[in-house]
Image 1 (tube, rainbow, N blue to C red):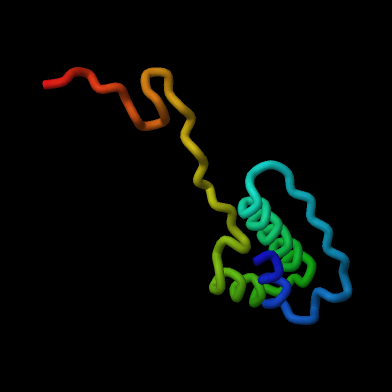
Image 2 (cartoon, rainbow, N blue to C red; image 1 turned 90 degrees about the vertical axis):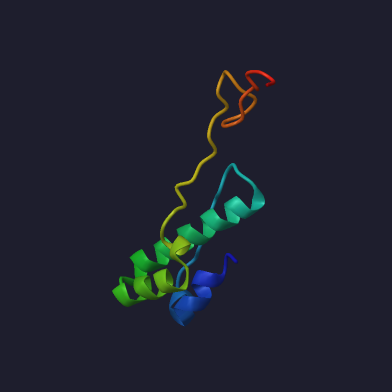
Length: 89
């Protein structure tokens, strides 16, 4: 999954070294973050608008982060949405 942007670019990336450091989250979240960072770096380095369009057509998450986050737990319930039952009948 991390190598997808490299495979789409072809041989144009072989003249650079790529080093990515990710912290926090799970394994798949880190893989997705590394994939996005590699794709953004390649687009900035190659400076080809057609490459950015082809990456977006393949998978939009290569260049755009997913804004969804976990809702925090609220004080009157057991979770973000779950509430205590007010009454029975």
